Amino acid sequence: MAKTKISEYDSTAANNTDVDGINIAESCPPSGINNAIREVMAHLKDWQSGASGDTLPVTSGGTGSTTASGARTNLGLGTVSTLNSIATANIDADAVTNAKIADDSIDSEHYVDGSIDTAHIADDQITAAKIADNAVGADALNVSGNGTSGQVLTSDADGSFSWADQDSGITTTSLTANYYGVRHFVRYDGSASISASQGVSSVTNTGSGTYDVNLSTTAPSTYTVVSTPEQGADWTAGCSGTTTTKFSVIMRNGGNVQINVGSHNIAIY
Image (tube, rainbow, N blue to C red; front, side, top):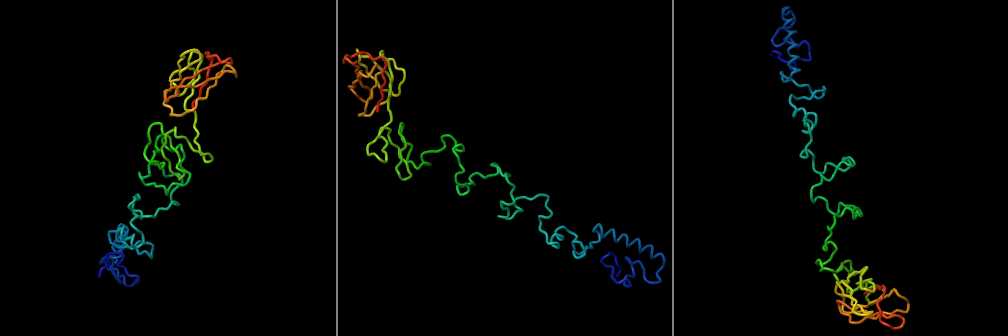
């Protein structure tokens, strides 16, 4: 059979008596030698280009195949070896560990919404600066409802909170009675002109040494008025006609005479 390509050549020299049908046996015509050499060169070129279909075995440094897929199989490679880029579909699940991710290489745009839960946030990592204004509602504080205007949160001593009216007081751990901050205060002069106040709408001079103090926020039914006239240690002040919206003050000098005060401070508890 004529030897038409390199793979058909024999490793035993005496068995190679033709090249693609050209006689090169002993006593062949001289012209056959020239033609045979030219044919061998053509076979070599066909082998290089792959036109002959011959392959070089893996054991001889080749791939043993004329196709990319066959070469990958023979060399023990996967399909990734011929890709120009790697897509997520080419990566096995759970194949990328944190050791393969460069430091500071993942930013917020690479997080899927809702993908980070509390188990993935280290303790003490969220500061007040990271919480948006008005972002924490009553439900996040284990409080039922939103309360009403003017109410405050008080501890239930079990990790939860409740809404309470401000005038209900705050019970301490060592006292059974409630104590309160200043509910209202006012500073005015003898003509009832107010220079500072909180919760007081006006002061009216109703007579010599008498003043009506009108409240802008409602007081509880029972409260205490502390009065300090800035006139002298012998001046006194009395209180009468207390309601939840006003009360009257009577000023007397050291001679027990009702007289307008020069300056007067009042605090209501």
